[in-house]
Length: 254
Image (cartoon, rainbow, N blue to C red):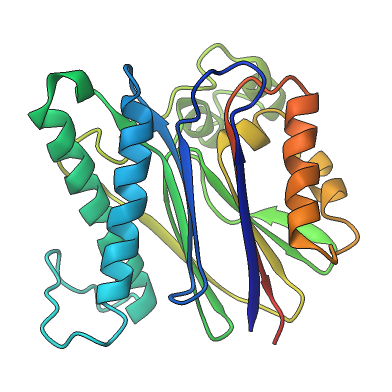
């Protein structure tokens, strides 16, 4: 059994919310997309990505026998990981084509973090700097890796953790859905324990408050996911609310 809840907020500085999220208990698919691009194109990109993800996950749930796998199946990955990876690649194709076909959408794209829950296994795919965290036994850890310039520089030892926080290129991402005609997708899997909570969020949350503050908002393990989501969004807005902020919380109960 899983409990889930999602919420998005425009923040304190933006007029338009370019984030979109998905909470679909029927297919156990959860996602957050943070769009980018002028003339409202970011909102278009994130919405297209969410719709494409949902459509393929529904189609590949086993009800349709004639499903095609346009990118093939990777034998080293689980079935759920293949489903999620394919869904994100299809979303990339959809957004890229839409951007290529209409001048006002040129250059649009979106980050994505998406999760599937099958039994006790959490499968997470991502591109960009939207994140998935896991709260387990009072400890919070980031499951995804940011596709950003500063993250790559930190991994290579060019920047320290402290330098990342104030670096002028900290918002530059190196991978996004729709930016190119093909996309490499990172997928990770984790076995859940009862009570574990997964948090999917846009950078409007983690760029405004620290991981320690996120943990405090989720500790003790929240009785109410809507209340916990509200605390997270309020904390981000209280810290300045410089961007749209979206959170999706998923709790594994059995």
